[in-house]
Image 1 (tube, protein in one colour):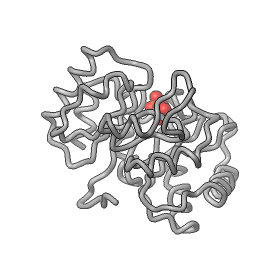
Image 2: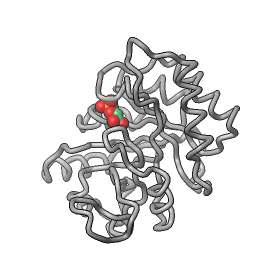
Image 3: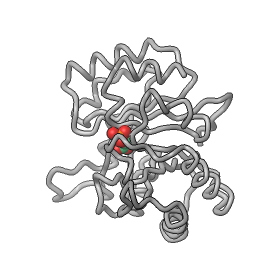
Length: 230
Ligand code: PGA
């Protein structure tokens, strides 16, 4: 398991279904030159995954995968294929991917030596209706019933109300929720936060988490350089 040391955090750029080949190449070339103390994982559209050089400091992540190694599943990609593409990480259970058989995919990724980044968060909550106690209760239930039986994974806490809305969860709530998960459930795995992270709040969120997962903000190549230098 990769251990975070000396204020190192995970920084994940999830480009979703965005980016031309030229833009991915530009991002890789630019980010490669940035001096960062963080562990940086780039999840481009999978068709551009092969563009990353194998000796790069940037780690490659996939945005999703199926739980089977092969079969009649039109449009899907398997963990075996990701392994051959040199993906070291995969997002599992992202809200834009659900419903997907999260537990089966977590296991399948692990089997192929790909570290799962397990995205959890209440699916129904609206920004106006966010209730921290309910959220904690929901997450507790997810951890109780779906926690993998292996240790080498990362958790990304992503409240639905904050994803792609430009309305990040208040930092005090992020802290309260992550502290609770770590203490009450004895979570040893890194817990990241995702949902409308941008340059304004990145440092504040990094200070209270093990890392951040960025969607739309990560499409700005220069802004990402600044975040990597935090
Ligand atoms: P966002 O996306 O940063 O655009 O809110 C985050 C995510 O989907 O994980």
